[in-house]
Structure formats: structure tokens, C-alpha cells
Amino acid sequence: MSRVSGSDASKRESLKDKDSVITGPAEDYLKAIYELELSGGAASTNDIAQRLSFAPASVTGMIRRLADHGLLAYERYRGVTLTTAGRRAALRTLRRHRIIESYLVETLGYRWDNVHDEAERLEHAASEELIDKMAAAIGEPVVDPHGAPIPTREGTVDETQYCSLADLGPGHRVAVVRVSDDDPEVLRYLATIGIMPGVTIAVLACEPFDGPITLSIDGERMSIGAPLAAQVMVDMIGNSEAPSH
Amino acid sequence: MSRVSGSDASKRESLKDKDSVITGPAEDYLKAIYELELSGGAASTNDIAQRLSFAPASVTGMIRRLADHGLLAYERYRGVTLTTAGRRAALRTLRRHRIIESYLVETLGYRWDNVHDEAERLEHAASEELIDKMAAAIGEPVVDPHGAPIPTREGTVDETQYCSLADLGPGHRVAVVRVSDDDPEVLRYLATIGIMPGVTIAVLACEPFDGPITLSIDGERMSIGAPLAAQVMVDMIGNSEAPSH
DNA sequence: CGGCTGATTTAGGCATTCCTAAATTCATGC
DNA sequence: GCATGAATTTAGGAATGCCTAAATCAGCCG
Image (cartoon, rainbow over all chains, first blue to last red; front, side):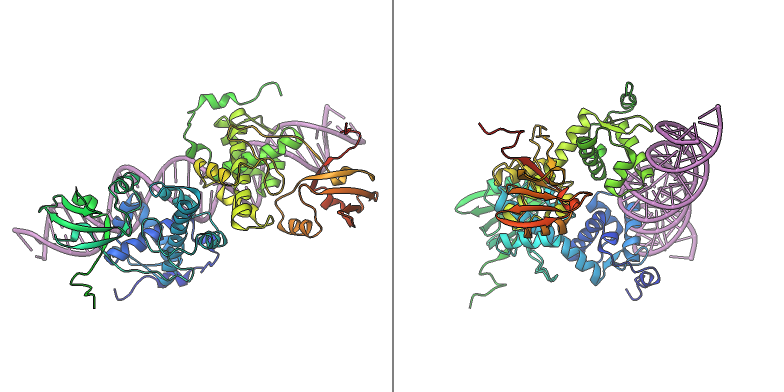
């Protein structure tokens, strides 16, 4: 990680025109890379390709271009790291996405399971002015309908990492903080069993080998599979981690 | 105008995938062609190029592709006419544009002079569902903030042609129906002098050779130039055309 | 330390959508 | 009827953003 190819960028024209450099697809790459970095350090070509459903060869081409424009540090065969400019751009897009999702739910009667695709398209078309007006109209929310934190206009964001329901042993009481937002069916199911941000869950039992997890939600007892549990991020309540005075 | 090359379309694959055929740029072409047809029959390559600020050669390429897909009838050197499918697509885009403009003004505090550009981008990204929800949220408007009629979901629209302030002689009393929406500065100026849809105007005098036109609006007397007057569409009030009972 | 395997990059292609420059066509006037 | 000029099309090129197939590189196993 000593020397990165970010110096290539300065050799070429440093176009600062927002529209010409950061296109819609480029925004998608930056978003994906940001989220990969959050959970696992540097983002590899393959990770990015998988996340965006592109061929790895296509990713190589795009990240080369993004690196040329100083949005990420790229060393061949070593994966990719966002620069400050790239991170800023990623957070800008993430802010747009999450404010749009929040707005659609709050004011237009969308349900939380079908805002993702709409936001995915609108985030590339909405002006900064529109995003700010939407945010103001719904009271400057700090999380989106799925519990994801909304970056500020200034580019700061809460990056607290939570563990998932699947990471817990029995006996924990937790608060749901956030759920994965991209699968409508998962979201619909979670809604029917009452799992959404803010809800309190008690973990009653965990079967080994990624077996089902038994929960108590609002007095109701139920089981969910490990893959689903892994999509539910939670915060400890009154456990060893957070001793209440 | 007897034989048109629309038959070419049927020879090729008739892809009905919305996203693959009618791209964002294609929607812009169809919109432009629709509006040119409204005022002047068939749309020529040059007209389209000028309206979209593209080189005429670029227009030739695009209209060939649109013709291949059955969206317009195209005969070399003869200009272009929308087919039913093309007209439908144009009206769909126009509906999106105008509902978005209306929504931004009604619910997000936009002023009428800066909604055009925002709508120009959002119209290519918004789903049918979003447009319908926006329309419902503001009471299914029939005209946009500039007075342009909004096509229905079913693809019908009021195509009444109005004359402009510049077409009138002295002595007429008219109601402003619609103003051109694409120049923010013009809109801001029109707002300051009180010209907007619904306002009543009396034409006091018209200087020859495209000279200024003297008006009375709400008791105020003022003059505007002919080019500006040409952007204000009006409807006669109690004149020979429309004898009031 | 040579070779295998998987990850990654290069090479070459294709569609879209724009451009400029050079034909070509149309319409018209002499 | 043919020359002129304007409108239009063709030709060729560039950038974006994706693809597949064929190298190439890195890391690891024996």
C-alpha cells in the first residue's frame, strides 16, 4: 500500500466539470466501492463486478478511468481505494439515494420495499437543490426507511458498524437498526413478521451450522433462517457491551 | 407523402422492451418532433437539430434508428412524421415532464422559472408509478405551471392552438393561456410584469415592423417587445370569435 | 522453486450518441 | 437544362460503457 497509481491522475487533464467526469454509471461504481470498503477494506475488481452484475473485465476499464480522474487509487491486481474526492462523490450519491427513498415513503405513499429501484434511477438525475428541498420537506431525516444513515450535505456520515442477528448467541436483547434495502421480497417478509428499524428483539435460540434462529418480537415467538438474519443489523441493549450506569 | 419508409420497421426485430428502444435521448427527439409537428406539419432534420442543439448529421442518424423501430415515418430528404407509437411515446414523456414541473411548484416550493431543467432530467428516470403518484398528490392537474396541457395517462391531450400576443391588433381583450417554459430569464421577467396563465390583458397599441406592444394588465400600462410577446399564448375574451351570449 | 488456480488485465467488439467534413440531393432561378 | 445554394445524408471518428475470449499475474502447494 506504499505507492498507488493516483499520480497518474495529475498527468492527465484534471477535468473538474461534474457532469463530464462523474456520469451515472460512475456514480454506481463509486457507491459500490464505498460500501465494499466499509465492510472489507480495499475493494477488489471481482467484488465490484459481482455487486454491480458486470463482467470483471468491464470493471477494470471503468476503475482505470475513475483512477485517471483522481476518484480512486488503483494499483493493478491490488484492488481499489477511494480518494477523498471519490469518497465525497460516493457519499453525495448515497445521500441522494437515501433522501429520495425517505421522501417517497414519507410523502408519496411508497412502501419501503419498492423505493430502492426508483431511487436508483432518480439519484442520477436529481439536482442538489431538489435533494435539499426534499430533505427539508420531510424534516432532515438522519436515516432512510431501512435504517441506513443519510450523509449530510457536507459529506459526513455515521459509519458505525453493527452486527447482524446471525452473529448473536441466545440471550441477547437487541434493537433493530437497519435492514438490507435491495430485495423487495425480503423487505415485504420482514414487514409481515414485524422486523423493522426500532423494533426490539430477544434472541431465544440459535441452531448450529447456520441453522434457524428463534426470536421473540413483541411477545411473538418465531424462527428465521440464518441468511435472512444476516440481513438484519442490530444494536445491543443493556448487554456487556453497553453497561447502563 | 404517399409511400413512407415505415415498412422498414417490420423487417427488423420489433423489440418492445421499453428501455432498449426508447432511451433518454430518443425521448428528447420524440418530444421535439411532436412539438414541431404541432406547429408546422412534418418536422425537418434541420428543425429538429436546431431545437435540440445538435448537428443535423447527428439527427439523421437518430431518426433513422427511430424509424427502424417504428416510432416515426421517415423518407430521405422529406422530414419526419410520428407514427401512432411514436406519438404515444412523445406524449408519455410530455406528461412526465409537465407533471414533474407541476409537482415541484406545488409541493416543493420551486418557482416556475427553474423547474424546466430539473424536469428535463427527471422525466427520463421517473417510473409511471411515480408520475401517477405525483399527479394524484397535486389533484390531477390538467395544465402545468406555464399553462401547457398535461397529456392523460391514456395518451390524449388538448391540442388547441392559441395565437400569441404578437399576433393581435389593438383593442383586443385576451386571457393568458400559456407561456414558453424554457427560458428562466423570460419567465422571471414575465412574473415581474404580471403575465402568467389566467391573467387578463388588454392590447392598447401595436407598433409596426415588430415594434413594441402596449398592454394594460390589471390596470397597469406597459410595453413589451414583439419577440417576448410571441412567447405569450392567449385566448380571446368576448371578441368576434367568442360572442358571449 | 516450478507449476497450478483463480483473479485480473488486455485485446478486440459492439451499440449508443454525439461530432466534423465531404458528398449528395432538392429546389429554384436564369 | 443546368448551375447555384441550401438542406440533407454519408463517411469517418471519438467517448462511454458494456461484452467475450485470451493473455497475464499473484499466491500458494508440494
